[in-house]
Structures are given as C-alpha cells and as structure tokens.
Amino acid sequence: MLLSEIVNLIDGEKLWEFEDGDYQVVGASDMLSELLAFAKEGMVFITGLCTPQMVKTADIVGVGAIVIVRRRQVPNQTVQAAKNMGIPLVLTSLTMYVVCGKLFCAGLEDVNGVKK
Amino acid sequence: MTKMEKIDDLIKRVQFYFKEVKVEEFMTSPVFTIRQDQATVRAKEAMRLRHFSGIPVVDENDKLVGIISIEDIIHVLESGDLNTPVSQNMSRKVVTLSKNELIVDVAKKFELHGFGRFPVVDEEKRVVGIVTQHDLVTILLSKLSILYVHDARREPFVHTENYRSVPTGISLKEEIPEFQFDIDYMDVSLAGTGASKLKKFLLSQGFSPKFVKRVAIATYEAETNVVIHSGSTGVINVYSKYGVLIVRVEDDGKGIEDVEVAMHEGYSTAPDYIREMGFGAGMGLANIKRCADKMMIISEPGKGVVIEMDFWGHENESF
Image 1 (cartoon, rainbow over the protein chains, first blue to last red):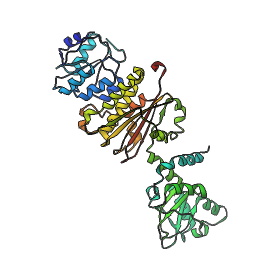
Image 2 (cartoon, rainbow over the protein chains, first blue to last red):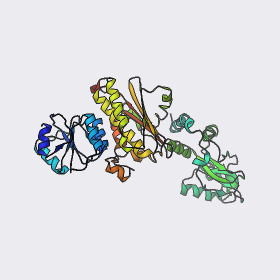
Image 3 (cartoon, each protein chain N blue to C red):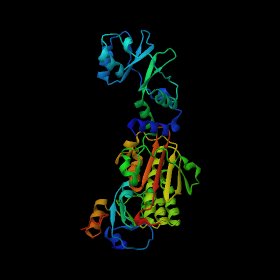
C-alpha cells in the first residue's frame, strides 16, 4: 500500500515533504525497547510517542515510516530528526486503536505476517 | 575436577580482581560459640539444629581456646562420652584470621591447612566472626555480581561453568579501539546517538545490514542504560578480533544491585518521566541477550557497569 494512501485513510498530515513509497508491514507500540525487539525493516511504526528519541530508535531498526497518533504537539527536533534520517513522519488525530484497525482492514500485515 | 577443586580453581583465577577485599567484609558475624565447660552433647545438638559443621570454643572471658567440628563429635560418639566437657574433645590447634586480613591470604590459608572454617578474632582473642569456604565463594560471586554469560556455541556448558568467562576482556585495554564514543548522560534526548553513529560506521566498513542491525540494537540498549540509570558518563569502545566484533559499554555510575533480577524481561527501575519517553520497558538486557552472540555484565553497587557484547557473523549475514 502506498504511503500516500495510508495518509488519506487515516486522515493524516505529512510533517515533512517526503517521497511516496510502498509499505506492507505495520507495527504499533509506545515502548521503545519493544520496537527494538519486534521491528521489521521498512515497516510502518504507529506510536503515541513524539520525542526525537523515538525517531532515533526507529532509525536503529530501519523503520520505514512513522505515524504519530492522537494529534499532539510534535517537537521541532522530532521532525528535524526524521527529516535528517529520511524517515517519513505522519501525524493523525485518530487513536492508535483506530489507526491499527483501519490499516489492518486495508490488508496490511503485522511483523509475523498476520493479516486479514 | 571435583567440585572443591573447581571452586579452588575459580578462586585462584578471580582473586586477582579483588585482592583488596578484607575479611570483615565477608565473614559471618555474629558467630555462634560454645563455652569449653559445656557438655559436648550441646555442641552436637547445636550442629544438628543449626547445620553447623564446626563451632568455635571459648573460655569464660569469651576468648577463643579451640574449635569443635563434626569430626570431633563423631570421634566422641564412637569412643567417648557426650557428657564430657567440650574442652576434652575439641581441637586446640586453631588457625585464626584477623578482620583486616586480605581475601588472597584467606584463600591461601584454606589451601594450606585444608580446614573448612577459620574463626576471626580481635586483639584480645575474642571471636568476632567466622569464615567458611562458602563465605569465600559467596563474596567472590557477589563481587562479580555474576554475570550472565550467554554464548551460543557454549550453551551446553554454560549451566555448569557459569563463571568461566569472567576475566575476559580485561586485556582489551591494551588494544586500540576502532570506534569510540563518549556517552553524555546529562541529556536523555541524546541517548542512542552512539549506537546510531556506530551503525553508520559499521555499514561504511562493509558489514552486512542484518549484522549491523543486531549490533546497533544491542549497543543502543546498553547506551540507553548508561544514560537512564548510571548517573555518570560512559564510553562505548568497539574492537574487532579474530572475526569477532566486541562492543564494550562501560560507565562509572551506581551499578546494578542484582544482575540476575535485572536480566528478567519486564524488570525496570526507570522513573516515571523516563517511562513516559518510551523507555523503561525492562527489556533492555533481554534485548541485548537476544541480539548478541555472547554478553557479559560485570557490576556491583557503586562501581559502575561494564557490558561486553560479542558478535560474529551468522550464515545469512555474510560480511
């Protein structure tokens, strides 16, 4: 699924001008260690965190795109970090539950290949 | 090797690292003593009930005059009278320790005399403690605060020889690190910078992305631990040796109280504000264990933490 389609689906906002790309795998967590434990290269990462730290952690494991849920003030440093590392960053006002539900229903799979 | 020889061997190999430890740090105190004019049967009962293998014997001024052991009791049971006073059946030849003796000398005394225990006495020969082989082993292990040793190749042996790898890495100091990074603990938002840099460095050196990812995750966790928990600066050193990549992360901070507990997934001592940032899931050490081919932690309260992680290429991660 194209990231632009995902952005539309979750009524998201692009936080910097990144290029479109294709995504298959999605994961969600608010715990960075957990991200390190389960992340898959190139996946979409859904989170409630918005610290620059979160972006750095995502970069370590090669996350392909980040969706920050429940629209909150995203610090400039976070956006800057994502931009520097070339990781697309999307903001939405939906809750994590709904974002996960929508993407799951759209046919995207989790890190273990589980899908609709 | 018998169990005792193994312990001796272990003691010999590790005593160098804490030769400064004094008797008073690891002796058992206060110590149960028996008066020399008491009946031997009381010594026998005390041993049975309290599982002692020997008891220091004192006179009416609490001064040490001998020691009575299970062997002495057996002797009395065979050919003596349990109602006779302890003084008749005890051994008068007692080797004692002082509070300030060093652990290395104690280890030597065990070796030299072959006794199971040594009473510790003050200047007036009053018994202030006792040291058994068990105390010695316990102090050595707690000083090392042992150490989780995880090595896929040695998995079958790990359970029997947990302590083998303890002194490795000490000589690393002489090697020139290929990558070095100073960890700044003052700024939590900088945590992970070292791991990030290391990742780029290794990729630029031609290591495979899969391999680099493992190294980066483990280093990231170790680095974040320094920032969140140590309250001190730290350093990441990376070497490679015989095809093995060694990442050593150390700090001079407050150390880990109990490494074994800290290894458990879900265990965390991180404060709330740290958790709000997404840290403190208690998965750090477990994550390192998962990523590294071998890991070693040396720590004790107040003396910092050294985590050493070894990585070697797996089949699907050709260099």
